[in-house]
Image 1 (cartoon, helix red, strand yellow):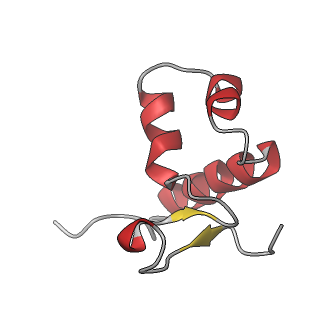
Image 2 (cartoon, helix red, strand yellow):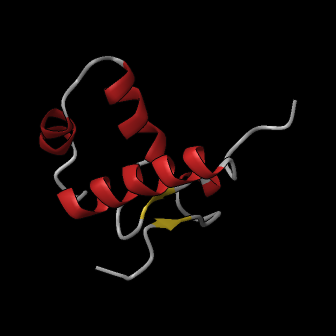
Image 3 (cartoon, one colour):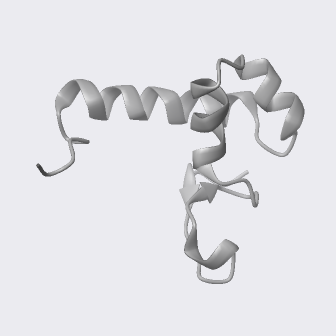
Length: 74
């Protein structure tokens, strides 16, 4: 596994942000959680994503939201 959490490349899904070392879009995790799925359900559906990757992404998203650095422009 690389030390990067998210990768973007025009060669992988047209530049969609994916979990590093996979072809799994980051948005898929968020969609699963929004639908009420458990993290374990997502990990079962996408075994190329490790638990540590998913948890790190959620922690990063939480930090961005709490610090305000992830706010969209109004």
